[in-house]
Amino acid sequence: MLILALESSAKAASAALARDGALLDMAFRNDGLTHSCTLLPMAEEVLARCGLSLSDLDAVAVARGPGSFTGIRIGVSTAKGLCWGADKPAVGVSTLEAMAWNAVGAAPADSLVCCAMDARRNQVYNALFTIADGAPRRLTPDRAVGLPELAQELADTEKTIFVLGDGGALCYNYLIERSLPAALASEDVRLQNAWGVCRAAEGKTPAPAGELLPTYLRLSQAERERLERMKKETN
Image 1 (cartoon, rainbow, N blue to C red):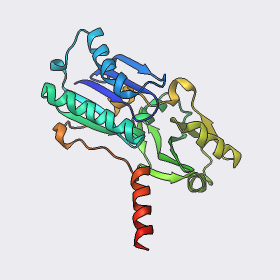
Image 2: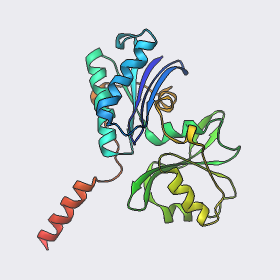
Image 3: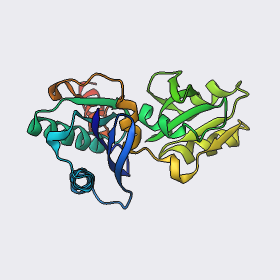
């Protein structure tokens, strides 16, 4: 299967091209430029470097969340546009599951893989995994969890807690301060990327692009403020 994958759920953005689980090319940017300006050009770039076009693809995969509300919308919208334009199906994958693939070959043996994205308000978007038979195996659902609650959940583990993600340093520091056995992934594997999206998409059944929906896990700040205003007005 030839897959074009997109990742724009946090500050970094990337596009990757893979065939049957082998990476063909990837473009990655973490320079602060808006994803609306960089994501599509990166997708076009990897296709051009491989001498391929959208018509050659079997599917377009994208990290559908959790993560930045704006970043997720850009990624999902771009994936849908490419799919509709080329009449191709889509595969939406969990940002955290895709991130966990970075730990394959990097995490210490028999460790807990702790994927963490900074969700603000002393929370992280998080899921826990273990690595088995060369692939991540999920231990928890994707969730928005407070750092105190996450630390309490991990308090009794004797395994190394391998932390990665754009919220990895925040999470690692919190766990280390509480004497938990955490290890922070090196920078070259810490951030989520489109190659992880490719690997997470392998084996999943593509679906019509119209069925692709973002996953936010919690309300946006604007929605929270609106509900708070309505509550005050009601009272």
